Length: 156
Image (tube, rainbow, N blue to C red; front, side, top):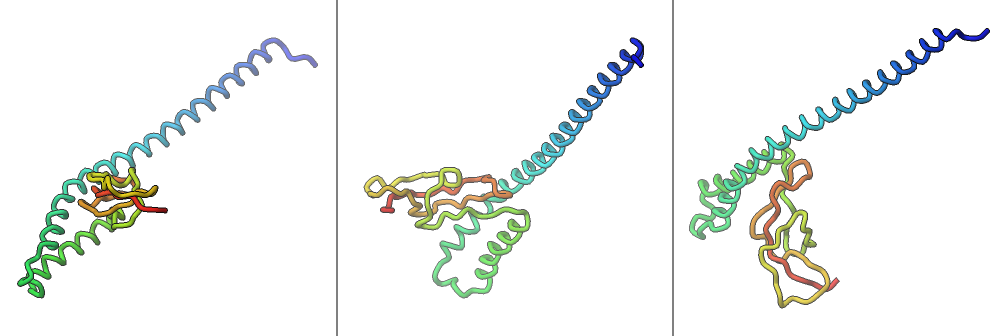
């Protein structure tokens, strides 16, 4: 039994509407994913901005500790101030903030390290950190401030 022209038109219209509905559903799912990703990114940006304001304070505490006068070593008050650094470090870890490894001998990585000084006289094919000049940090694995370092060369 042959389909009537009206029935064929209706089936074609149903097919077109079904395809439109599928496209609309896919567009909405993509929009929902994008909106969620943007929400997460905005939260991370806000968190990074807050952490960035704390980093100079942490730098100053670390500098003060490194220049602790010999006569204050063993002093309870001085030890308490030094303990602030450890407390701040734990707080940062709880926020998923980590210090970038920039110890002497660490392989230089331009994504994590910013070369402020380069030892021009050093020879070798491998660039490594000679000295960390300022600590760098990552938030959720993404660099928010590179470690400022002095770079030297070494043999492989």
